[in-house]
Image (cartoon, rainbow, N blue to C red; front, side):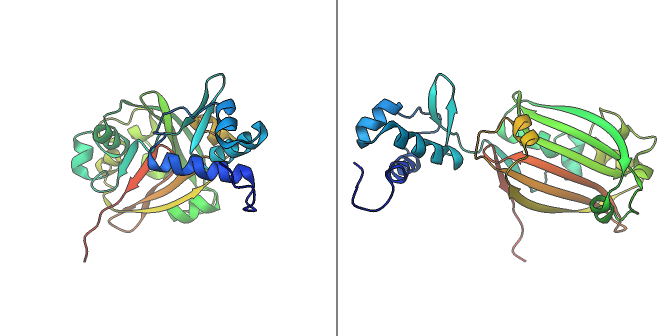
Length: 253
């Protein structure tokens, strides 16, 4: 029941109680919440109060509404992105690097749509790739799906000098992907640097990733650096925040 003497708005009390029940497992991922009518009876509040409470939980990314069906508890992250060894030469040789490694670990069927284009480096790209602003770059724009559901957007940018005449400028880069083709062309990769962040999606990102209201995205910018210290590739990734868990492991030196 709502405590009307507490000074806390009724919809916040309802939201807090539902949030606690979701956290405790009373409502499991995928479970449908009681209807508006049932919740008004349980908490002795009006329908607008219930709607405000549900809207709060939806904005927090805890629930999602399906038109004509009801409100459901949002499932937790389903894809574990394991940083350790996902970009190793051994993984690439087995054609199990990066996104394919995530698929192998979690048992989903991966698929990717690729578009190739060429453009001039803006100031941000020029800085990451140590190029002059306006230098020609190759862009690999990808939409990645797990069992048909879009889970990641990735845009790789490479100096055109490194990609000209290679399969990197084709949709299918072949076994081992673009990194294998770079090394075949004599550009050995020495290390990777990743910058991880989070923000709310743009309208286009929310549409492509089919995100519910209130669900954030995880952003990862990875730069592949050659053994000679020269940047070889910059990859901007956008991951659905409700479908990914990022896992990192390193030695305690």
